[in-house]
Image (cartoon, rainbow, N blue to C red; front, side):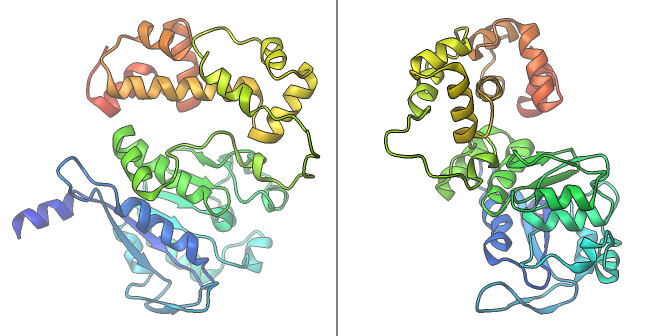
Length: 331
């Protein structure tokens, strides 16, 4: 019993706040992703609890309700609060205000608690003023509305999720899986996050942003794709990759290649290549003892100075600090 108690105390407590009309798929994401994260000895790394504004039944978007054992007071125990989207955006959010019952629930959250929204739950965080001056995203169909209603929010319509330290937001539906996997990676590193992803039968990291999922006219027969060139790029990341060379490989003009690439991936070729190189560098920093200049060359950055620059831009930390966080070692 003592060992079980010690294990529970060491777990990171995730509390999921289910509001009326909650989308059932998104409600299940935190329990599924965080619930599968285990340390090397098989012990759970997260304790996941679901609560409502009060105990009892909560309507869902499916043909059933869920009955919750806990009310909003459970939020006071959270290290991380996750709020899945509800089917309809509360009219109060559209008026720039937080409903009184939500404000009362939020009052239970301790200062410094990490707060996460999935899909349009970002409107709730915006109404609470938690997104003012911060990057945020939401479902691509609602990004314009979020920006219009809350002009202080730095809405990014292209990304699958945003991470601003203690406030994180995701785009629609399955992007909640991406964000929760990102949190596991941030908390415990690549190996554990990858194991969770494999057990969930999802990729540990998806290329591009949600721009690639926005509705576009279906390409006609014979329309060329950049897929083969993206595969070629991944095999040549250690080399200089000029836009003209990529376009030539795709048998397109530079202008057509750039437009087609962004339509398919949601990023420019340059940003996508940098993201691939950052991921390689992250993996090498976490799993090897290679010095910075070796990692820079293997990731395609060339120099340790370039590695530091791009890693800091992408993650906000230097390579030494990143390795110390995930590996407990220094260069």
